Amino acid sequence: MNKVQLKQKIALTPSGTGIYLFINNHKKALYVGKALSLKKRLDSYRRTEDPRILRMLSEAKRIDLIETNSEIEALILESQYIKKYKPEFNIMLRDDKQFLYVGFSTDKFPKIFLTHQPINLDSRSMINDSRKSSIHNSKISNHKSTYIGPFTDAGALKVTLRLLRKIFPYCTCKQKHNSYCLNYHIGKCLGYCCLTREDSRIMIYDLRIYQKNIKAIRDVLSGKKESVIRQFEKKMKNFAKEEKFEEARGLQYKIEKLKKIFQNAQILNTRYLSLDTNGDSTKNALNQLTELINAKRPLKRIEAYDIANIQGNFAVGAMIVFSDGVPDKNEYRKFKIRTKSTPDDTTMLKEVLTRRFNHPEWQYPDLILVDGGRQQLSVAQKVIFNLKFTIFNEFSIKQLPKIIAITKNKRHIGEKIFVQNKKDPIPLSGLPTNVKNLLLQINAEAHRFAISYYRKTHRKQIPKFTQ
Image (cartoon, rainbow, N blue to C red; front, top):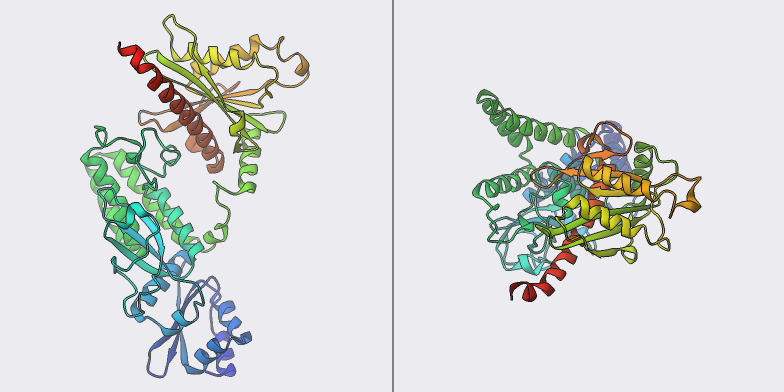
């Protein structure tokens, strides 16, 4: 294919998202690629000076195009075609980079992980060889695993998995632990990793849900998205007939979210704006939260409190601090509860807050987040009000800290917040995603720190307690 032929092909090429295949005289695929704009991508081949690409162009007889509705769909389709045709120039043009595969372990609760194409895996067997696969997690490497791939765009693949995980939660924890992880609180994990093996909450039902999530992700990445949606729609109708409306609504949510991912062609343009790590997104979340609670000054310092105990025994309190939306562990504080007479969580919270604000040398917060409901919010408000004319004398002109209480449901997942001076609670589902995740992250960190301190105290006192 010469430059004139290429130019003619480009003139007829649509501007949409899709994949393209360079085909030779023997109707063999030389190269498969994806593009957000097919026209722009093909036009870039006119300006190349790479001898390998020039050689590919010289061998190409035609270019086949397949349009898709989104870059995610193009990513998956590209992977399928590379796996099917094993084009020689896809390997040749990778330079020092390696293809990426999505691996699925065979654990009881399977793990999903990413791994590069092993160096010693030849082009005739680019998938499904667990013996040769390079897996970076030693806890997974002992298991036989299956793989989907190869994928050429690591960034797009990671974003795709991140989006799918919001619909089909799965665990990424490397080991089991005894408190709920942050991903559980923000709906990205079903929480089995947060429990011990003996915990009765790990039921057959939970296992089935988890395995169904893994299967759905595997099917979507294998190009069976339409099949997944049809299965969900069939089950949703059956649930509706049986008047299981909650289950039907759950499936409807998954269907809508899955369709939305594949309908938005621009969705991967935000691939580097992760809510968990991006500074601009955290700043935006803080600004939105400031507006939500009608704060008069920016939320530079947020303090969160949690209480840990067993029926009043070994009771401790914890204070954690987020500065500019980031954990500031040098400012964390621990409190052994001194209250002895019929203690409850609200009484303990009152003690911890009172003792905290007896330290004027500690920087004062712009926002206080407490674990609980309206009662905990009321307790925190009373403490701050009673101290208004003592420790806050130098801030008499400025506003006192704002207060939020976060309430969890029976599964210990954040459900709604009570905001100071607002009559009705606000469902977390009604908040902007980055604001919701920030609040859940802060609350989960306070809980983690409190539980950690409680266990340490508990272990020290157990011998004395059992004598």
